[in-house]
Image 1 (cartoon, rainbow, N blue to C red):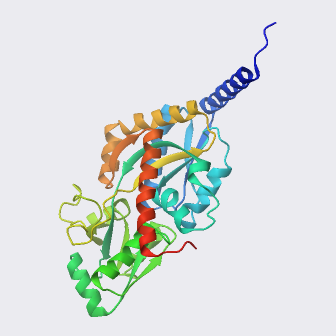
Image 2 (image 1 turned 90 degrees about the horizontal axis):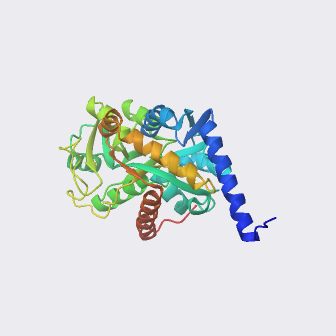
Image 3 (image 1 turned 90 degrees about the vertical axis):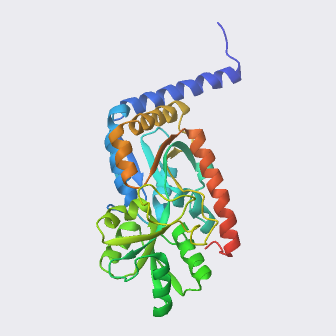
Length: 322
């Protein structure tokens, strides 16, 4: 009888466990795709599109589960506690993964230790939009209007977020008395903008684009190095004299740490297949996303680089983690 060495026995056990978990995913009836924001916002719409399209390549019913609150913190904590078998995933943008751990002392999760990147699928830009009841048609007109008014409140989808930091920087750069009003997601913020309860908001292009097209809000300035093909008449903040915000935020899908590589790779390949579908790419592009598949390794590298960029900005701002 041949006896395995302890190291070989551990390897065999690990491979067996990985095989069992991969089989479990293949046979799963339902996969949950968690979103950290309420229904009706840009992230929710993106998740529902991808969930529907992922059903075929994953061979399972993929459902969106909204765990809204605290800028995605509740959903992130739920992912940390979820089984590491690929049946619970988290679709998130940069705020929850890269920003929250830097602005909250005890967020209840550590992305580097608790999460595994699965697939990135897009980058996007944030921007400033004004509500329909605001007389300003351009960014410079908005600046002049606020100076005449004396002060203004600007909505942001989450506290201590990139949009909130941007409100602070805009106020300092253009000597405006601006106060950020944090919401629990972009949907309630947009509702107040459409009702002219607030005159302006900072959020992502996907959050604003449909109402911008309908003339209900007006995007007047965007982050990023270049103007967006979808919004050729909207200048970048760099053009307007506010530089340092060119690094683009990202969207990605994450799994609990410890999820087997075979499961991660299979799920990432399913995302790549979905993104290759012309209708999916067209739909996401129309929402203001720059679509492109990132492997787990590429998403991990993108997250680290973006986190480092914002670590420098947050430190320079003097913000103290709460």
